[in-house]
Length: 312
Image (cartoon, rainbow, N blue to C red; front, top):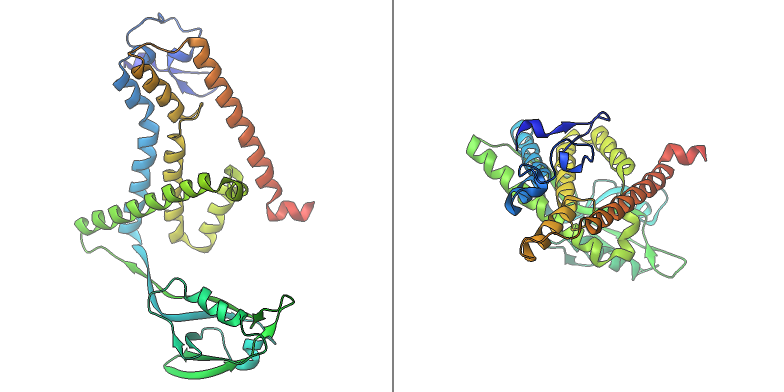
Protein backbone atom coordinates (compact mmCIF):
# COMPACT_ATOMS: atom_id res chain seq x y z
CA UNK A 1 0.00 0.00 0.00
CA UNK A 2 1.52 3.38 -0.98
CA UNK A 3 2.43 5.67 1.89
CA UNK A 4 0.25 8.38 0.39
CA UNK A 5 -2.81 6.33 1.28
CA UNK A 6 -2.18 6.38 5.02
CA UNK A 7 -3.86 9.46 6.39
CA UNK A 8 -3.10 11.27 9.64
CA UNK A 9 -6.25 12.58 11.29
CA UNK A 10 -6.46 15.86 13.18
CA UNK A 11 -7.15 14.03 16.45
CA UNK A 12 -3.80 12.27 16.24
CA UNK A 13 -4.82 8.83 15.00
CA UNK A 14 -3.37 7.24 11.89
CA UNK A 15 -5.90 5.25 9.90
CA UNK A 16 -6.75 3.79 6.54
CA UNK A 17 -8.74 5.83 4.02
CA UNK A 18 -11.26 2.95 3.92
CA UNK A 19 -12.65 4.31 7.17
CA UNK A 20 -12.72 7.96 6.09
CA UNK A 21 -16.04 8.94 4.47
CA UNK A 22 -14.49 12.23 3.30
CA UNK A 23 -11.60 10.56 1.49
CA UNK A 24 -11.05 11.61 -2.14
CA UNK A 25 -9.88 8.10 -3.07
CA UNK A 26 -12.48 6.15 -5.11
CA UNK A 27 -14.16 3.39 -3.13
CA UNK A 28 -13.21 0.83 -5.78
CA UNK A 29 -9.49 1.74 -5.71
CA UNK A 30 -7.59 -1.55 -5.70
CA UNK A 31 -5.03 -0.18 -3.21
CA UNK A 32 -7.63 0.34 -0.49
CA UNK A 33 -7.27 -2.27 2.23
CA UNK A 34 -10.86 -3.49 1.86
CA UNK A 35 -10.24 -4.17 -1.84
CA UNK A 36 -7.00 -6.07 -1.34
CA UNK A 37 -6.83 -9.90 -1.49
CA UNK A 38 -7.79 -11.82 1.65
CA UNK A 39 -4.18 -12.75 2.48
CA UNK A 40 -3.06 -9.10 2.30
CA UNK A 41 -5.83 -8.05 4.69
CA UNK A 42 -5.07 -10.89 7.10
CA UNK A 43 -1.40 -9.82 7.21
CA UNK A 44 -2.24 -6.16 7.84
CA UNK A 45 -4.91 -6.88 10.47
CA UNK A 46 -2.59 -9.33 12.27
CA UNK A 47 0.31 -6.87 12.41
CA UNK A 48 -0.60 -5.55 15.86
CA UNK A 49 -0.85 -9.04 17.34
CA UNK A 50 2.47 -10.05 15.78
CA UNK A 51 4.08 -6.87 17.13
CA UNK A 52 2.91 -7.68 20.67
CA UNK A 53 4.33 -11.21 20.41
CA UNK A 54 7.67 -9.98 19.06
CA UNK A 55 7.85 -7.28 21.73
CA UNK A 56 7.21 -9.88 24.46
CA UNK A 57 10.10 -12.00 23.19
CA UNK A 58 12.40 -8.98 22.91
CA UNK A 59 11.63 -8.01 26.52
CA UNK A 60 12.49 -11.52 27.73
CA UNK A 61 15.66 -11.54 25.61
CA UNK A 62 16.75 -8.20 27.10
CA UNK A 63 16.08 -9.59 30.59
CA UNK A 64 18.21 -12.66 29.86
CA UNK A 65 21.11 -10.51 28.63
CA UNK A 66 20.90 -7.82 31.33
CA UNK A 67 19.90 -9.45 34.64
CA UNK A 68 19.40 -13.14 33.85
CA UNK A 69 16.37 -15.37 34.29
CA UNK A 70 15.04 -16.08 37.79
CA UNK A 71 14.97 -19.78 38.61
CA UNK A 72 13.16 -21.43 41.52
CA UNK A 73 14.93 -24.41 43.06
CA UNK A 74 12.78 -26.62 45.29
CA UNK A 75 14.21 -28.05 48.51
CA UNK A 76 12.71 -30.58 50.95
CA UNK A 77 10.26 -29.38 53.57
CA UNK A 78 7.96 -26.45 54.19
CA UNK A 79 9.32 -23.00 54.99
CA UNK A 80 7.99 -20.96 57.92
CA UNK A 81 8.43 -17.29 56.85
CA UNK A 82 6.42 -15.82 59.73
CA UNK A 83 5.37 -16.85 63.25
CA UNK A 84 2.66 -14.89 65.07
CA UNK A 85 3.41 -13.72 68.59
CA UNK A 86 1.76 -15.71 71.41
CA UNK A 87 0.60 -18.36 68.92
CA UNK A 88 0.81 -22.13 69.39
CA UNK A 89 3.84 -22.22 67.09
CA UNK A 90 5.57 -19.49 69.09
CA UNK A 91 4.89 -21.29 72.37
CA UNK A 92 6.21 -24.52 70.88
CA UNK A 93 9.48 -22.91 69.80
CA UNK A 94 9.10 -22.43 66.03
CA UNK A 95 10.96 -19.41 64.63
CA UNK A 96 10.72 -17.50 61.33
CA UNK A 97 13.04 -19.12 58.81
CA UNK A 98 12.59 -22.64 60.18
CA UNK A 99 12.01 -25.43 57.69
CA UNK A 100 9.62 -28.23 58.67
CA UNK A 101 11.00 -31.35 56.99
CA UNK A 102 8.72 -33.93 58.63
CA UNK A 103 5.49 -34.08 60.62
CA UNK A 104 4.69 -36.94 62.98
CA UNK A 105 7.54 -38.92 61.46
CA UNK A 106 6.44 -38.45 57.83
CA UNK A 107 9.01 -36.59 55.73
CA UNK A 108 8.02 -34.28 52.89
CA UNK A 109 9.32 -35.17 49.40
CA UNK A 110 11.86 -32.88 47.77
CA UNK A 111 9.51 -31.94 44.94
CA UNK A 112 5.94 -31.65 46.08
CA UNK A 113 3.65 -28.66 45.48
CA UNK A 114 1.14 -30.22 47.88
CA UNK A 115 3.52 -30.19 50.86
CA UNK A 116 2.00 -27.02 52.32
CA UNK A 117 -1.59 -28.23 51.99
CA UNK A 118 -0.64 -31.61 53.49
CA UNK A 119 0.90 -29.90 56.51
CA UNK A 120 -2.12 -27.62 56.90
CA UNK A 121 -4.41 -30.67 56.83
CA UNK A 122 -2.44 -32.33 59.64
CA UNK A 123 -2.63 -29.17 61.75
CA UNK A 124 -6.36 -28.72 61.15
CA UNK A 125 -7.12 -32.33 62.08
CA UNK A 126 -5.26 -32.16 65.40
CA UNK A 127 -6.68 -29.34 67.56
CA UNK A 128 -5.40 -29.54 71.16
CA UNK A 129 -3.31 -32.61 70.26
CA UNK A 130 0.47 -32.56 70.12
CA UNK A 131 1.96 -32.54 66.61
CA UNK A 132 5.64 -33.44 66.29
CA UNK A 133 7.59 -31.40 63.75
CA UNK A 134 11.10 -32.22 62.60
CA UNK A 135 12.66 -28.81 62.03
CA UNK A 136 15.80 -27.73 60.15
CA UNK A 137 17.32 -24.54 61.57
CA UNK A 138 20.65 -23.57 60.09
CA UNK A 139 22.75 -26.75 60.07
CA UNK A 140 20.81 -28.43 62.88
CA UNK A 141 17.79 -30.75 62.76
CA UNK A 142 15.66 -31.30 65.85
CA UNK A 143 12.11 -32.11 66.96
CA UNK A 144 9.58 -29.48 68.05
CA UNK A 145 6.25 -30.40 69.61
CA UNK A 146 3.38 -27.98 68.93
CA UNK A 147 -0.19 -28.26 70.20
CA UNK A 148 -2.54 -26.50 67.74
CA UNK A 149 -5.13 -24.13 69.17
CA UNK A 150 -8.75 -24.81 68.30
CA UNK A 151 -10.60 -22.59 65.83
CA UNK A 152 -14.26 -21.67 66.24
CA UNK A 153 -15.07 -24.32 63.62
CA UNK A 154 -13.26 -27.04 65.54
CA UNK A 155 -10.13 -27.18 63.35
CA UNK A 156 -6.59 -26.66 64.57
CA UNK A 157 -4.32 -23.67 63.97
CA UNK A 158 -0.76 -22.83 65.05
CA UNK A 159 -0.40 -19.21 63.84
CA UNK A 160 2.25 -19.40 61.14
CA UNK A 161 2.67 -18.47 57.51
CA UNK A 162 3.76 -21.45 55.39
CA UNK A 163 5.29 -21.67 51.93
CA UNK A 164 7.24 -24.07 49.76
CA UNK A 165 10.94 -24.25 50.58
CA UNK A 166 12.24 -22.45 47.52
CA UNK A 167 15.51 -20.76 46.71
CA UNK A 168 15.61 -18.13 43.98
CA UNK A 169 18.67 -17.94 41.76
CA UNK A 170 19.45 -16.56 38.33
CA UNK A 171 20.64 -18.15 35.12
CA UNK A 172 23.14 -16.00 33.23
CA UNK A 173 23.84 -17.01 29.61
CA UNK A 174 27.47 -17.67 28.72
CA UNK A 175 27.02 -16.72 25.08
CA UNK A 176 24.48 -15.40 22.60
CA UNK A 177 23.31 -18.90 21.65
CA UNK A 178 22.40 -19.65 25.27
CA UNK A 179 20.65 -16.28 25.53
CA UNK A 180 18.38 -17.15 22.59
CA UNK A 181 17.78 -20.61 24.05
CA UNK A 182 16.86 -19.33 27.53
CA UNK A 183 14.68 -16.57 26.09
CA UNK A 184 12.86 -19.04 23.85
CA UNK A 185 12.11 -21.46 26.69
CA UNK A 186 10.90 -18.65 28.94
CA UNK A 187 8.80 -17.18 26.12
CA UNK A 188 6.99 -20.47 25.49
CA UNK A 189 6.55 -21.01 29.22
CA UNK A 190 4.92 -17.61 29.67
CA UNK A 191 2.80 -18.14 26.54
CA UNK A 192 1.47 -21.41 27.94
CA UNK A 193 0.71 -19.71 31.27
CA UNK A 194 -1.21 -16.90 29.54
CA UNK A 195 -3.23 -19.29 27.36
CA UNK A 196 -4.01 -21.57 30.31
CA UNK A 197 -5.10 -18.61 32.45
CA UNK A 198 -7.37 -17.37 29.67
CA UNK A 199 -8.86 -20.86 29.29
CA UNK A 200 -9.54 -21.06 33.03
CA UNK A 201 -11.13 -17.60 32.92
CA UNK A 202 -13.67 -18.69 30.31
CA UNK A 203 -14.29 -22.15 31.79
CA UNK A 204 -14.89 -20.71 35.28
CA UNK A 205 -16.17 -17.28 34.31
CA UNK A 206 -18.60 -16.96 37.23
CA UNK A 207 -15.70 -17.35 39.67
CA UNK A 208 -13.08 -15.40 37.70
CA UNK A 209 -15.13 -12.48 36.32
CA UNK A 210 -14.41 -10.36 39.40
CA UNK A 211 -10.66 -10.83 38.83
CA UNK A 212 -10.70 -9.30 35.34
CA UNK A 213 -8.59 -6.13 35.48
CA UNK A 214 -8.79 -2.88 33.56
CA UNK A 215 -6.07 -0.32 32.77
CA UNK A 216 -6.12 1.25 36.26
CA UNK A 217 -5.51 -2.08 38.02
CA UNK A 218 -2.83 -3.05 35.48
CA UNK A 219 -0.97 0.22 36.06
CA UNK A 220 -1.26 -0.23 39.84
CA UNK A 221 0.14 -3.77 39.63
CA UNK A 222 2.96 -2.60 37.36
CA UNK A 223 3.88 0.18 39.79
CA UNK A 224 3.90 -2.27 42.70
CA UNK A 225 6.10 -4.69 40.76
CA UNK A 226 8.51 -1.88 39.87
CA UNK A 227 8.77 -0.83 43.52
CA UNK A 228 9.27 -4.31 44.94
CA UNK A 229 11.25 -6.15 42.27
CA UNK A 230 12.69 -4.49 39.21
CA UNK A 231 13.48 -7.92 37.72
CA UNK A 232 9.79 -8.78 37.88
CA UNK A 233 9.03 -5.77 35.69
CA UNK A 234 10.46 -7.61 32.69
CA UNK A 235 8.15 -10.56 33.30
CA UNK A 236 5.18 -8.26 33.89
CA UNK A 237 5.78 -6.38 30.62
CA UNK A 238 6.23 -9.62 28.65
CA UNK A 239 3.07 -11.20 30.10
CA UNK A 240 1.13 -7.98 29.46
CA UNK A 241 2.11 -8.02 25.77
CA UNK A 242 1.23 -11.71 25.43
CA UNK A 243 -2.14 -11.04 27.05
CA UNK A 244 -2.79 -8.17 24.63
CA UNK A 245 -1.88 -10.39 21.68
CA UNK A 246 -4.16 -13.24 22.76
CA UNK A 247 -7.10 -11.03 23.72
CA UNK A 248 -6.79 -9.01 20.51
CA UNK A 249 -7.11 -12.26 18.54
CA UNK A 250 -10.47 -13.11 20.09
CA UNK A 251 -13.22 -13.02 17.42
CA UNK A 252 -15.01 -10.09 19.01
CA UNK A 253 -16.15 -6.94 17.20
CA UNK A 254 -13.82 -3.94 17.65
CA UNK A 255 -10.83 -6.26 18.14
CA UNK A 256 -8.44 -7.44 15.43
CA UNK A 257 -9.86 -10.91 15.90
CA UNK A 258 -13.29 -9.59 14.96
CA UNK A 259 -11.94 -8.04 11.77
CA UNK A 260 -10.12 -11.28 10.96
CA UNK A 261 -13.33 -13.23 11.51
CA UNK A 262 -15.17 -11.03 8.99
CA UNK A 263 -12.38 -11.51 6.44
CA UNK A 264 -12.44 -15.29 6.94
CA UNK A 265 -16.25 -15.33 6.59
CA UNK A 266 -15.83 -13.48 3.31
CA UNK A 267 -13.28 -16.06 2.16
CA UNK A 268 -15.64 -18.90 3.15
CA UNK A 269 -18.40 -17.22 1.10
CA UNK A 270 -16.23 -17.36 -1.99
CA UNK A 271 -15.13 -13.74 -1.82
CA UNK A 272 -18.61 -12.30 -1.29
CA UNK A 273 -18.53 -9.64 1.41
CA UNK A 274 -21.18 -9.30 4.07
CA UNK A 275 -23.55 -6.37 3.50
CA UNK A 276 -21.73 -3.17 4.49
CA UNK A 277 -24.53 -2.10 6.85
CA UNK A 278 -24.35 -5.44 8.67
CA UNK A 279 -20.57 -5.15 9.09
CA UNK A 280 -20.95 -1.60 10.42
CA UNK A 281 -23.61 -2.67 12.91
CA UNK A 282 -21.45 -5.55 14.14
CA UNK A 283 -18.39 -3.35 14.58
CA UNK A 284 -20.35 -0.46 16.14
CA UNK A 285 -21.97 -2.75 18.69
CA UNK A 286 -18.58 -4.23 19.52
CA UNK A 287 -16.99 -0.81 19.98
CA UNK A 288 -19.83 0.28 22.26
CA UNK A 289 -19.49 -2.92 24.31
CA UNK A 290 -15.72 -2.44 24.68
CA UNK A 291 -16.19 1.20 25.74
CA UNK A 292 -18.82 0.29 28.35
CA UNK A 293 -16.71 -2.58 29.69
CA UNK A 294 -13.65 -0.32 29.82
CA UNK A 295 -15.53 2.38 31.74
CA UNK A 296 -16.89 -0.19 34.19
CA UNK A 297 -13.42 -1.64 34.85
CA UNK A 298 -11.84 1.81 35.22
CA UNK A 299 -14.46 2.92 37.76
CA UNK A 300 -14.35 -0.38 39.69
CA UNK A 301 -10.55 -0.56 39.81
CA UNK A 302 -10.26 3.11 40.78
CA UNK A 303 -12.64 2.60 43.70
CA UNK A 304 -10.53 -0.39 44.80
CA UNK A 305 -7.31 1.62 45.02
CA UNK A 306 -6.10 1.92 48.62
CA UNK A 307 -5.81 5.72 48.67
CA UNK A 308 -9.29 6.06 47.13
CA UNK A 309 -10.72 3.73 49.79
CA UNK A 310 -9.14 5.94 52.46
CA UNK A 311 -10.89 8.99 51.01
CA UNK A 312 -14.32 7.34 50.94
